[in-house]
Image (cartoon, rainbow, N blue to C red):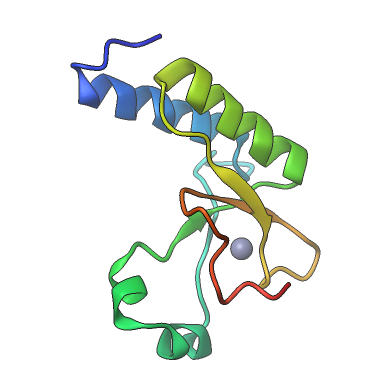
Length: 107
Ligand SMILES: [Zn+2]
C-alpha cells in the first residue's frame, strides 16, 4: 500500500494501473478514449457537463473489474463499478466512482 500522504504517488500508481488494463493503440501504446456524441452532451445536465467526458475503455467487464480491484488494493482508493458503455457497438466497459451508473446509460 502506498503512503496516503503522497497524493501524487497515489495518482501515479493509479494511472499506471489504468494504463495497464485499458484499451490502447497498438503502436503508440497510448490509451484510447471513449468520447460522448454531440447529442449526449446536450441532453446532460450542466453539472455533468463540467466533468471530464473522455473515458478509458476496457474490453470486458472482467478486465474493468480487475483494474478497479487493483486500484483499490494498491492505492487504497474506493472501489469503482464497471458498466457497459451504451455507445459501443461491440461492447466495452468503463469504470465509475458514482454509486449509480450514469443516468444516460440505457438499462
Ligand atoms: Zn464507451
